[in-house]
Image: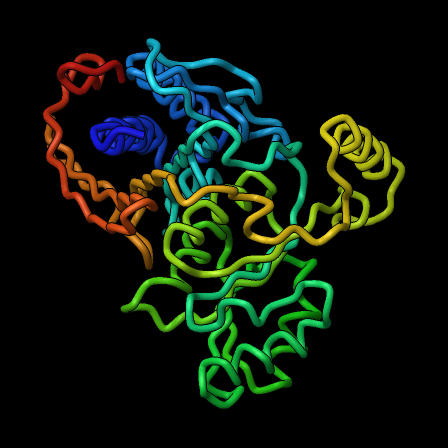
Length: 335
């Protein structure tokens, strides 16, 4: 992919983040996501690519989508795109931290094509690469990671999602002496923190969305870390009710159509098959990874993390946007 596409993709996540930010604290996560989707789609269609959305978003939360298989762009480099216009819709709606707009792009065939369902994820930085195995008990994995990092278990830091499905796992890790940071949402940011040199996070473990899992795999590969995952049907995550089983059976059927086996271990290389990826994330609300959007009148400031896997460069871009007060359009772009 061309170098200038990295900046083009950063403008896409900036635009989506600004659109979602308009709904900050208003309690309507679908409206926020819909606004971000609309702008992300518009800006992708102004980009010189022949793009295909291979990982979309929204089905788990019944939100609007950039749907799997959608073609975007004006023509140019053929790229596969994985998106999450707002990773943390609820956090945006409630004015909470760590909401992002994210996009990963790679050459054709780079990303796993998977339904929007749940995924169990285990993520580490480069110093623990090669020692994780999601088929083994979490206790064994944490011991192996701690050994690889040369630290005792009581100095290991794990992030997970603060969901009822993780209550027993959190308790088990704490009984081992492990430090557990439980966050409301946002496992893409939590995954990236395992690979950032200034972060104290060693491990991300939890069950979240599969789209976020594939996006995470792309950026973790670009950063030299490691990841395992496996797809889980809804009734195995949310409880075996009649409704959840109906959704779960639909997800299993979609996996069969896509040639994927639920419950089977997915290595990082199965989810992200190339180092030639571009990852862009723009903060919507302030978090551990990025600053959120600040706005004064018609001037807004964004911070974007831009990673090019091929040359393993990491850039933090602070941008100032002059907005049209009438319709909140950034000059030169549709918002």
